[in-house]
Length: 373
Image 1 (cartoon, helix red, strand yellow):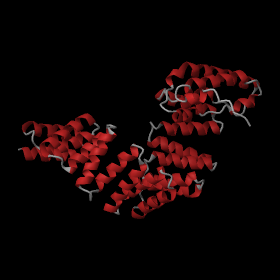
Image 2: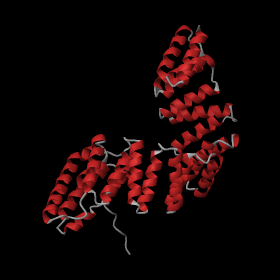
Image 3: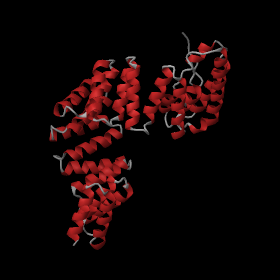
Image 4: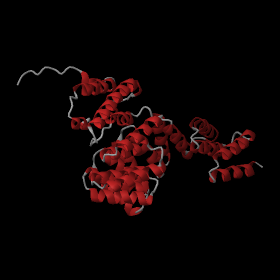
């Protein structure tokens, strides 16, 4: 009977009905709690369901009942990795590699956790070991390229990504990564070719669609950029970066009201988005229909500044880099109004200081007096 129920649980599991699989595994284990492989299967289903605490407890029971099998340790490492216990995950992956050095999965896991720890140079060696164990492992070559990219070893990164594509010409991530490199080199032709290839092979690759939009935007292909950004939003309606890109393009092309609507919609979903708040409150027309239109826009801008000051406590950042990335905003179109902007600019500067004072305190220290020269 137990064997039959295990097979039923496996069938639920293979069909993706994880809740029923877990429930059936539980029934089996209630009658025989010493079945290490069933604890392992249950932990796997829980991990796939995002029930990380339960998965960690179940894989611990598997190890207690069946010993430190590499497959059990690999799953435990993956759960710990997802729970952001990077030291624990690294230790388990290292034990998997020691026990089964020919197994690609252990090297891949160890490389991934070391990438997350900021140890890309060590990750290179782990991914090298993975592709040495299996030279046809496409993801291994892609991950090796990513580690090289972090180390700014661009040519080696490109060779790794191209080798991945020689194994699988439709591997979207390698196309996407090459597109990013070519974009950084201002080689828009090759960047666009690879970004579009990534989209063709993986239509739900939202970041690739965004990259297509960014390249076309730089090439001044406004219609193409609009199509790419809207396609990115359609593929992932909750992707705020895609919505911000669309809002920015609307503002750039003079569609102020459309831009404000987009920024406001983003702010409603994510009130902590400083970039969206800036756009919702400060975007200005490029051309004015009349003096009255100009004055009304100016009043709206001043009110927007007041709203930003009221909302300032919502905008909190862990690092200076994150804060500076979000707060980038230029009041360029104020100059088109031909008015005295001193008080408005002082108000904007005061808002920037409120947001940046904590994460970027070093920018507000008095400058040291020069010794001479």
